[in-house]
Every structure is written in structure tokens, then in C-alpha cells.
Length: 172
Image (cartoon, rainbow, N blue to C red):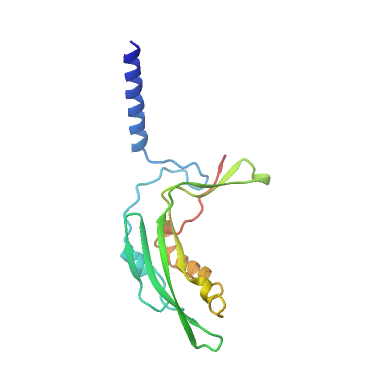
């Protein structure tokens, strides 16, 4: 009799696990209380076409894509104080999915709440280049921040899910 109840418990546990995998994840944030939708495939060519051109980003974008990441390559053409071109900096923009939730416990009047910075599976991007090598040039200081901001501005209308925005706060 004990063996039968053990096998029934094991079967029930297996069914519950399968049902949990099939259900969409529900968020409990104040900003987004609906079930997470199944993500549509991303048209990386359209993303490439939306990336900025001009204002120092003077080359054509090239890309490499994989299942859960995409990398776009370009170069920034810097100018000195006299308005003369002074050099190039090659950089890349890496789009990736977060592997786990990142939560920030709050303190003070918001104690007991947690800021959800990102959820597992959310898309985000980072700009990578040799920024320390050109930091002493007049056009090198703050270049990474400038590139991140201009790329975010170009993508926020058509591809907001790629920009890694905060999800708001939840009760701890």
C-alpha cells in the first residue's frame, strides 16, 4: 500500500511539474500584472536598420546572430576641438538575454519592497570597445555613455523589449 501511494505521489509531482512548465510566467509587479507572452522571433535585420547612422557613427553596421544573442559592429569617427577628424574607435553592441532575475531590496520608506531590475529572459544590450585607450582625447570622454544613449533612443520606439528597462517594484 505504501508503494502505491509513493508512486501516486511521484506521478502527481511529475504532472504538477509539467503543468508549471506549460503555464506562462506571471509577474507580480505593479507596472505589469499580465502573464508574460511568448516572445516573437526578433527580426535582427530590422534592428540593424534601426541602429543610428551619422553623428560620428559613420560606417555600415555588420552583425552576427545566435539563438539568444546578437552582436552588431561599427566604428565611431571622432573629431578634435578644431573640427578635424582625429581617429576611429571600433565598437560593438551586444544584445543578450539575462539568465536570472536581478532584484534590488529597497530601504527607508520603501523598506519591504524590492525593485525588479530585470527578469530572467529579458533582453538588454551593452556597448563594448577600447574606450580607455581614447579617454584622453577630447572626443573620447563619455563616448560609451553617448553611444548607449543614442542606441537606446533609436530602439525604444520599435524595439523597446531590447532596451532592458526596469520592471518597477514588488512587495518582498
